[in-house]
Amino acid sequence: MTTFTLDDMRRIMGGCAGVPESVDLADDIGEMTFADLGYDSLAVLEMAARIQQEFGVRIPDDAVDELKTPQAAVDYVDGRLAA
Image (tube, rainbow, N blue to C red; front, side, top):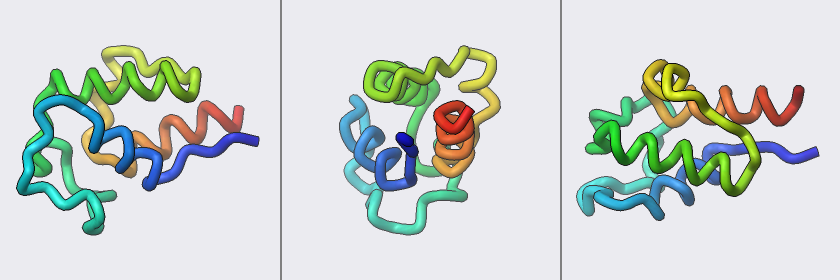
């Protein structure tokens, strides 16, 4: 069974455009908001598109708006993969 982990999220976040250089994705980022990490709404949408492309899990725009932290995104995607 495929799972989606915080390490997967870190990798995807690191590949998105406009990533602030001041962000250390190796830190404990799980509960930090995307906004606090310097990710704007466009970067978060790009992450959602990459997740869909790589893992086959679609994150609708309204759900993207509700996913405020990397851990929330991990929980959402991992829950869809387990279903």
